Length: 289
Image (cartoon, rainbow, N blue to C red; front, side, top):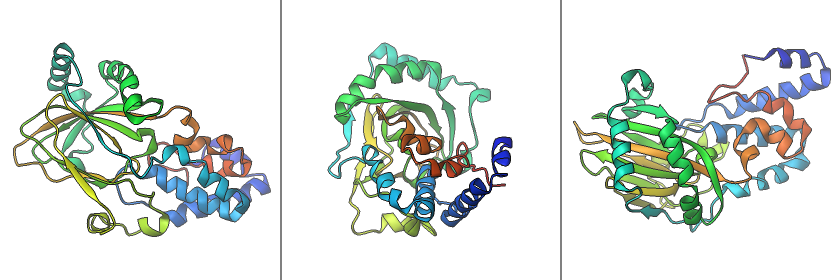
């Protein structure tokens, strides 16, 4: 839905022309079919849009995202005994006793899990972990968001990449019925619109140029991985099983205006980007209706 401010600006013929190119660019990219692909959809739309209205700025724009791209030799880190026993017990207690009314259940069908976003205690822990994850990543990180993921007997996690606000994920195992492996690709280039349309999981699972590793966590262990440049997935959990995980997300300090697409025109000082950025909504919704 267009905002009142955008509708008012559409009275300006110059803005209207850019707005129409922006709409066409978003529609050209279309839906990107894996979970958490909203950032890359907008990144691709911006490349297409700039090629139409500011072709001289495309290279500058693409190069500006270098801080969100890890080195190709990036290695996943395993952290043992993340928390002391008192803290670990508190985490277990919270996870076991989250009221049903405080859980989001919209991913029951797609992931077989309930979610709890940014629990106050977990926000405290996430902030405390910044020095550790920054040291492991070899760069200063800041907090994105976190969520508690309560997988049940129909749990699964299809291949996907995360958005760069969760560029670095500390995947912490709270407790589980048994070890549940997670699979990671090596660091790869971001998919483009050409190879994301009509995408299916087998495109990455069967790609001979992609190397995969498998990790299995124990309770109070964690993995630090780069989810915005590594494909990752879990197969179906064994019937009747469960796995309670806590995901702490981080991104590089100084990249606030890169991870939020609505800020791109300001960050790059490309005013022509503004009509496109104003269409970027929250989550997967863009203001096109």
